[in-house]
Image (cartoon, rainbow, N blue to C red; front, side, top):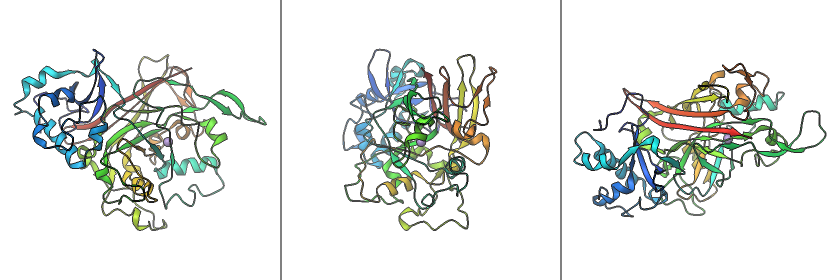
Length: 415
Ligand code: MN
């Protein structure tokens, strides 16, 4: 498949991708959009051209508002048809070339916004490597994994109100922390600010009713697509507050997501096997057993730039295929009690870590709780994030001669 708008081999946004997002243009108007190479295509304008009229959609004009809320609520089949219609409009033999050229704008002339109204947000803990590393650090004398971990995808209900798009600075959070050797807590700026590289999945379609489950083998059609998620974490606040109910203020001050929702349809050819189970691992209960593999081969990278550096340096690289639990298993487990999902709800995977040191997905693991600082090219070291640091995450799938990518998720730490 080729577009009349050519893209480089390493572009994240060839015609094979066609992600969905919302962008604010220079004139202040925000519209649903897609991305092709270095251009943004306005889906509201495309809708006005009548491109989607012949599809017989449940909602005839899904891109009428500056949010993907309506699009997210469409059934999978209709979302798929819309994406294919956009691909046809952008293809080499498109009859709409002239019209499209009039409504594309350079990607760097727009500002990405949140793609949809995120009602509920849940964060999981689905990497066995991450959970084992954290277990070894915090419970050196016990088993690295708690007894439930191999039986269910562990998660907690997060906070949707502080989810922000790329580019929004992170204000260093304040909270209760207990300094080493102190008797009690102080109210202070966090001194152990960390990031977590995660992938997130947006829920779509009509949702399940209160009291009903979503089957692990049908779960994919309820997921619109994936984004990169940075689950900023204040480790000192977390350490003091997390027992017995899990993370609270340590993670609710900000969560950042990348601008483009890359659809599961675009990612389909990058499906891979989930990691092998050890012979000693317990058998999964039936509702968590998929009939086919649900992993994704997505390469991920994290880059850090201090205020004194001119260029960012790569501090970590790994692959999403290392995740032990799939998004489908997370959704099946989350709804196993009958908890209803609504379009726009966001599931995050938990920190994506792999077997090697360089593939660890947060500073807590990379610096082993601060005991093995990272050296930066400016001569400084990092145990955790400093004010002025800019953290940038990127991810892509490598195809034959093209990439399906997520672009960048970037934010600077401010005091
Ligand atoms: Mn997390």
